[in-house]
Length: 443
Image (cartoon, rainbow, N blue to C red; front, side):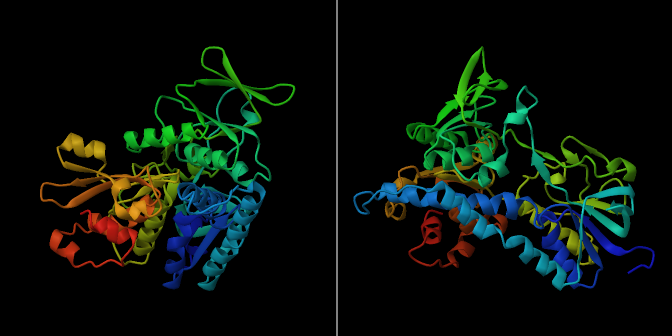
């Protein structure tokens, strides 16, 4: 380590864009520190993925019990309060666990808000900390609607921490958070209304599948308002009124603002350090390097075409570890990044999308999975797969709607990423019976 600075590498933020790479980097002998003003682990472990999937598990189980009605008997009801308590039991230990891993390899954890004063210096709690290289990993935060009454809305963290579930919930937005939380709240007994900004939900995903998920939720009592144009939220004598469209309104008990997430680029001193950024995030090159030579960025705060997902942040953080430790000098080369929305059924995808495949003239195979014997085991009725093959017959994309979708994508992902041919695929023998074996059987 140079005597000129306190650390070799200093990270601002302690989410997946940091700790997945910082821990093995410190193990190589680099002097590393992490600045964090909140919970160690950032959004995903504390108020994102881990919490959400725990709240969703009873929904998934209740859907299966519903399909197997007559074989399994008895009424099942989700206890919202117990579900939230269980979620907290699952995630409470994660910050200490991640902190322990970092401390075990000598990483200094500095609690407080960090702000650049120059390209090599960050001020935390009125104390200067210097480093040869600095990584901006400040992530995203919930967007707030710029309308009257925006202070009456709640965000995703509020939703996952509610001690009791309101009878009526309005969700503004129909992306990942909006659709997943609509599914959970509806299954737990709330009357849910989803206000779409335009006429489509989950715009990143295959729309025929999305529309089938919407139709199923509508059958379950969820109301979808397309092109809603929410204009105001007002308090009335007993609850809230959401005003939208042309002088239309709906009364509700609770409003979730799920209109997206925005990068944390303010109040970090980026201007003082000379780092370029915009409303989409921090600008980086193909080495995740900003316009300032010693400053890098990773995770959701980057202005990037890559999906702002945990797997992306993990890969970027690991890449920076390899770059800083001298293991590589090459530009980052992203693998296939899969994505999934945890509605019921799920929609998951990886590789070339159906829409891009059709535009490129690639082969798209559509399979009604509800007729597959494995999916009939738990009586899935909403299950469909679309596989994309290139001119050589190699699998280059997969999109699936089913309660098994995330596991199917994980099973087939190596085939897409490694560009395996039929002979290589034939060397893979899956456990049987399993969803992996069922998926491979359709290749």
